Amino acid sequence: MSDTGTTSSIRRNSSRTSSRRRKPKKSQLHFAIIAIVAITALALFLQQLGNSTAWFLITGLAFGYILQRSRFCFTASMRDPYLTGGTSLTRAVLVAFAITTIGFAAIKYSYFSKGLPIPGMGYVVPISFATVIGAFMFGIGMVIAGGCASGTLMRVGEGFFMQMISIIFFIVGSLWGAHDFGWWKYHVISKGQAIFLPDLFGWFGAVVVQLLIIFLLYMAAEKYQKIRSEK
Image 1 (cartoon, one colour):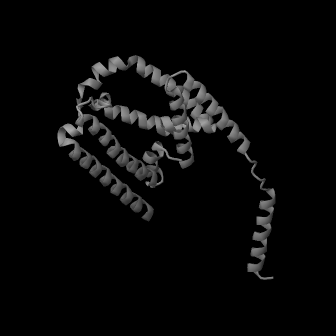
Image 2: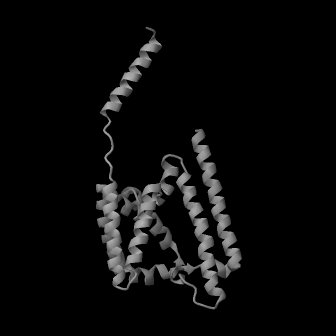
Image 3: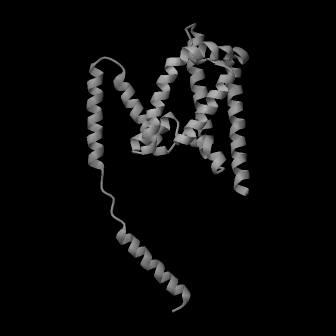
């Protein structure tokens, strides 16, 4: 028998052995049905209380399911370009930013055009050196933990032990930050300058400027991946 025939025979035997060893996956349909029924019952119970908790429950679970199935991760979008050179998630986040830019601008402008208070203006906060320091610290934390807030919660749901440790310190840090936030806001954060793009460029100009910046970042990410893949 030739070497080629021997190799093919070995591969077939190996494939048959691995297929025999591979256990069939157990159906988890009954668990899914039980979970759906339990969640629905809990949502109906919460709805009877007359608050928005039921809506938060349903939207939170839906958002978590989408994140888990799509493997969409903000941390990976910032980490992968340095580790692997891949920017597919980075570009996905930029596309999400572009879509939300148009959506939120439309919502805010609809209130502005009617003379109503613009929603979300409480999040237009000063930009200062504290922004750079906070971003740097958050970047270190999310890379070490392997996920940002949404990613950490998703991994906890999957049963990863490392993220369970991360969520504990995430809670501790959040409580500590909330306790001292007044001091930081008065002495550090408020020293910067708040920037609201529609005040500088108008509503249409603000959308165009932001989309242009996102587009340039998208092209840069695509070019960066191409350069890294050629090395």
